[in-house]
Every structure is written in structure tokens, then in C-alpha cells.
Picture 1 (tube, rainbow over the protein chains, first blue to last red):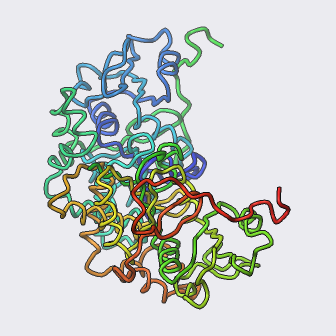
Picture 2 (picture 1 turned 180 degrees about the vertical axis):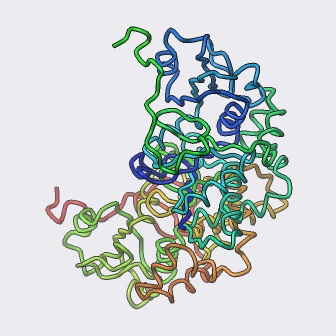
Picture 3 (picture 1 turned 120 degrees about the horizontal axis):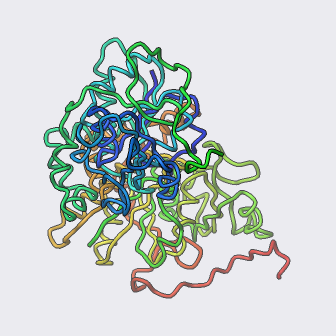
Length: 263
Length: 263
């Protein structure tokens, strides 16, 4: 199994990921939020690239079975139901809902990997479940760190390193890596003793603490808080049914993307 | 002093580096080669982006006081005098010569930083001299790893980490960093015990060994083999005269760029 890590979206073109197994990581906070939402019973997450798309896609179903979630500059977007804190996505708030999701880095990363064969969403909060799923796939894997726009983010790299390290440690999996994967493992080893401290001192963690989201740093660095793997199916991210074979045909989405005009 | 590291050219726009102090690192091998060439008496290095530019810039002076050096896929370019191994750039070969220099990643990195206030070329082979020069500048510094096209290269990151670590260790310098600089320092600590081993096992090191350049890995990971700092002055890279103050006005270059047609 080949493991390649990419530290930011600017490193690759969308089509590079076509038909590949891709793991998307945005520890602070989009990945962690998507994982929490689906674990708490959300029907599906629909990542979109822009606020305009979010408004258009949610159409006249908005507020009923469809919610809008996401952030700009870490803060909830005007007219949205939910921000980008995993703590907001409780069962009460999200059970049975479709959530149109727009964030600065995580949602674009999911969007970038939309041509993947299998797209898994990972964070510290579901790392073991993701590793088990990758082992099930038994194929090469490409780990895409969302980073911050074109920039490297240490928390995503450390999480990518944890995924890689757990795959290396599995005696049944023979692995080979690119330089980034080697570096990610070294970074995981350097920072694994205290992930919360790492999150508090990284660029985006400091910013989130400044805007009153310090509690999220603890949530997002709690290992294996959830035992689920969000996966892309069609254009939506949901939990795979246990009976669904790997690489099963995409199910067309049922969301009206025409703003309710039926065309 | 703020220290920011960038792991590949795709992370930043050319103008971001304008009027900043930039350190360009391409350990394997362009930085190491430029440092060796100037240390061995080359008059100047002129980095260009394409082979066509190299041919045009060298014009009718080619072969006399002007040489062409560089590589594609690690190998010397047809019609060029020198490849991209520091070992080729002996005093016999380069003394007094202007060298038009075109490589896949290092020369484009130098080109990308052409609007810098001060552009320094660094590798393991001159790391202490570079750190001394940065301390002299007493200003924020931006370390640009050439990487491999848009990709992260571990040897450049580790060298960036060494520069950063030496600056941190200097008690007179107060430092702050971005995530990449923190990661680079951690990577330097992880791999500093055996830089040659790191070079032999990294993606580009393995490729260079395959094409018969294993000896260069040893050369390029020898710490402080040279006590010089190549710096951009006008459009050429040369050794700064000790009397020249930081940020001194650029000296216009004397190379005929019209292919000898005088217009």
C-alpha cells in the first residue's frame, strides 16, 4: 500500500485525485464537525465551495429538513443555522437533517476530492475507524490536509502522521510513502504526547481561542471520540451502510439544486 | 524577528516576497551547487526559468566568460557546460565565469524570490554563514524551500528547520514563527542525527542515487563545508562584498541579453 500525504490543496490538481482513495483532514474544525454531525444522526453533509452555492442548494427546503452550516473567519455565516463547531452539531440540532456545509478550507478540500473513488473524512476524533476502513480498502491512499488556504497547518499534518503511523504499525499492511508521509509521521511522534498543547499553540488554534472557540480545541483533539467514517456517496457525505461494498456505485442525491424552481 | 517557512513554491505568489528577506533552500542540489560555484571563484550565477532563456541570455559570450549550468530530470542539459552537481563546479571549471543556471526547482525558487529585499541562498553546506547573515539583517525572514515542483521535500524542510533552530538558539534574537517553521524545527530534530541517511531515503535522494549521483548526497549534507552566502544583487547571485551594507542598491548586470545583437 502506497501512502501519500499532501499538506495543502495547492499541491495538487482536482483530477489528480480522480478514482483514488482519498482521506480529507481538517482537524480545526471542518472534519471534526462533519464527523460529529453524522455521528449524531445528521442524514448527510453536502460540502459546497461558496456561500452562494449553499444558499442556492438549500433552496426552499431551507430550515425544514435542510440546514446551512459553516464559517468564514471562524465565525458562523449570516443566515446560517450552524457555525463550524462540533459542539453545535448535537442530535437535537441535526438528527435527520441534510446540512449544506461551507467552510474556508475543509469544505473546499472535500470538494477538491469529489472525483475520488472513495473519499473518507478523518480527524483525531475518528482516527481508528478511518484506519480500519483504509485497511479494508487494501489499496493506495492519498491523505489530503486542508491546511489554511495554500498554507501548511501543523494539526492536519500531525493527524495525517497518526493515520500513517497506525497503518505502518499494522503488521499485515506493507507500506511505502512519499516525503510528506515520512515527515507527517515524524511530526506525529514529536507532538503526540500532548495534542491539545499542539492545538493551542498552532496558528489556527491560537486564532480560534482568540475568537472564543478554545473549547473546540479540546473536542477536536480527543482521539476516537466517534466510531464512524463519513464517506462521499454521490455528491453528499454520509455514513456508509455496513452492507455497502467498497467503491459501490454512487447514489444520486435527492436535494433540489435549482432553488425549488424545478429546472 | 518573525520566521516563516514555506514548503513549496505553490504556497506563495512572487509578489508576496517583495521587499522581504528571503532564504532560498534547494539542498538537492541547486543551492549546494550555487554555494560551491561561488565559493570556488565563479563571478556570478544568473538563475533563469527556462532552457530557452539560458541560451538567449548567454548569447555570443557563451563558452568564453559565460557558461551554462543546470539540469532536467537530474541530468545535464544538452549544449550546457555543467550539470547540477556541486562536484563539477571546481575552481578550474568556474573561476571568473558567469554561469547561466537553469534547474527544475532551485533556479525557479531563486527566480520566484527576485523581488526580495535580500535573497540569500542556503543549504547545509553554508548554514552557519547564512544564520550569521540573517542575524546581521535583524529583520523578519522568509525561508522558501524549493521542494519538487509543487511538492514538499523533506531535505529542504529539515534544512529550513536547522536555520530556524540556530536562530532560536541565539539568545540575542527573539523569534516568532508560523506552523511550518515549528514543523521544520521538529523535523530537523528528528533527522539531524544522520542527515546523510535522511538524504539517501528521501524521494529525490533515491532518484539521484539511481542516476549515479549518490556522491552528491554526501556533499550536499556536509554542514558548513563553505563559509559564504550567495546573495541576489540586481538579477545575478554573487558573494556580497564585506563592505556592502545590507539592502545596498542593485548593480546593473553586464550580460548581453539580446543574443549579441546589441538591441
